[in-house]
Image 1 (cartoon, rainbow, N blue to C red):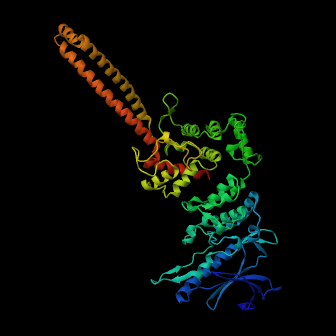
Image 2 (image 1 turned 120 degrees about the vertical axis):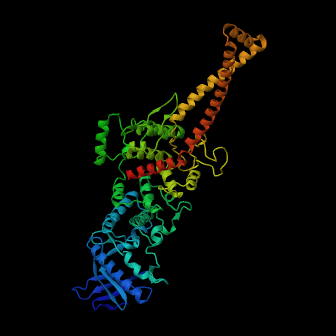
Image 3 (image 1 turned 180 degrees about the vertical axis):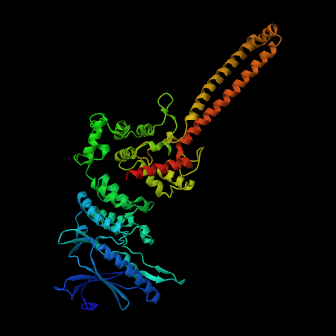
Length: 575
């Protein structure tokens, strides 16, 4: 192909690269003064049949027009020409003088967090324009991102859609199909490999490049968790929780769990290094001071340390809730007390009527209705505090991720998948034994750091107010009944030794003609009270067991399932 002249204008100088989708050449335009250099991409359908060629030609024309439009951006090569010769397709694009990102990412030196953030924002700013044109790149990798020599800017090259031409074929039924998934292993997520790329598929590829730069490990060598499919990379580098969370979301196994909007991602990256609202150090409880500090934070006036201590955090107030006590308990690793405090905070924020101390927690539990009263910021604050002091092991969003990873569908409650989720986080034993079929009572939960991932916090969502009252009354009735039993036994003793009951009947008969009947009636009532007291006592005991069961397996009901889905949605709203 070297020295060949295409279309009587473009002279091939050398081969730049060759892959499964075609070959790229360095060429020169002999029609223009100074013979400027350009890039020629050669594509050819693998199936020679005429029907395939016609479809390929239509696809080629369409994608070429898309590339022409994208080339209007300064950081995407201009399309100079596209044509077909001898049933072969050619694209001629602007030549970008510089080097691809393999020289930076694979240099043998790990990027710092600031360098990774800078690189991410550079790439995402250009990718944002591509997505705004309703185009998915589909083959983002270090080899397809150039660093332009003239201005040191990022340039995106080698868009993947046009490569579909290479994999076109016709099935035995006469349908046209694409036999080769466009993309590169290591940078290509599951849905793209299945031939259904999304905009967030590009975000996945960018996230993988960032992980490569941060860890110094190539994408092809990074392992995935066998149970969840998530990329295992944090053991390779000591990254901050902020950046780790962002990268984890970028490369999430399931596409719905990734960022769906580049603007939101860029905003979060821009806040790396800034102190989040819940970590601000306050010296008083006045809301006007909080408001002023929030303004300063939003204007990036302040850039203080991300960590804080119990003494410095004299008041952690977020909207209507005070998280100071929760912060102190979590910092001290007092998980059980912190779990209890979390329930109290969320019930207060949800404006639930409740009483504490004498009756314990008394009132309606959290549900999708009263949860609406809790702001997204407050909910995220509670979640971040749990994650911060458990090193990412506990938290609402951790539970949510495991919930989805175990196959649960937020739109449909399934008993089997929910049991799998509960077993994964340790709320249920894998064997269905005992009164509760393996479900743990609240008192049997593991309030220790060694608990399974996602085990805490445990939120009380059962509606226990009415039954709390009933059980209280049952308890009082039981006391009365026991007193009746005691009285009856005393009377029997008196009867045995002194004939008290008989004398009582005689006295009653002498005083009234129906005295004996009244006496027997009193005796029957006493027996009934004893029976009723024993019955209520048994109901009370069984109800206590039932209440503990409901509290423990609250997620197991379809109503609670709806609550969990709503909680997940509220966490997503924060992003």
